[in-house]
Amino acid sequence: MENKKATIILHSGGFDKIMSAFIVGSGFLSMGIPVTIFFTFWGLNALKKGGMKKAPLSRMNMLGLGKAMILRRMKRHRVASLEVLANSYKRLGGKVIACTMTMELMGIEEKDLREDLVDEYGTVGRYCYESKDATITLFI
Amino acid sequence: MQHTIDSEVDCIDENCPMPLVKTREAIMHAKKGDIIRVKGTHPQSFEEIPMALDAMGLEILDKERGEDVWNITFVVS
Figure 1: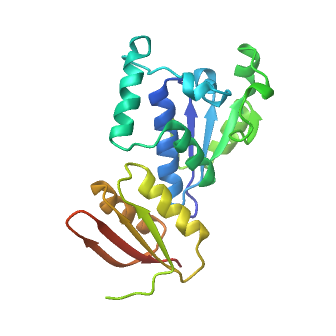
Figure 2 (figure 1 turned 90 degrees about the horizontal axis):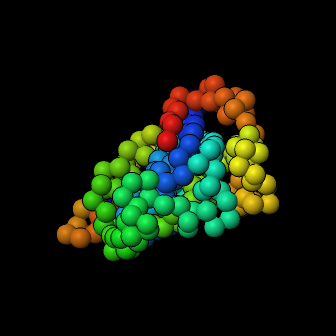
């Protein structure tokens, strides 16, 4: 769709929040609307190698018991895994920016992040430049 | 109405957001004029795939809800 564009800031690192970012992102892409997700602060953990697997639920995690229950229920209700959702987002052309300021703060290097997911490295300027003509922006 | 289907997208037993995702992927790989049929069981997708097609300005040729499985047929333009 012409003149439409969505940008999302993923600031949270909870399993459920990462899931929401990829699902909503894929929803826009499914309608032909380009999407960029800016991964910053705790959200950056999603891009780390093995990070999505380790991500706890943002609420009711209960030392992993809550997450184990959600994973079982996702299977039962045939909800796609986080890995499948992330790959779908990429296959539909979704763009991923990793925040380098957060990387410095947290001692994360490029080699720690998944190169199959990250398109660009940058800070707020790159996010705002992408967003200046976005018609939809979300903060998760 | 019978249409010659160029590609079929199987979303049976798939939950949100995969029917939308698979439909979009089929469109990305299709040629102009191709007719695509999506079949699935997720009730909301029967309403929401037409919303996505509307957003992209694609024309629905046929839409039918069976007892378990629904079908949506549309043309890529």
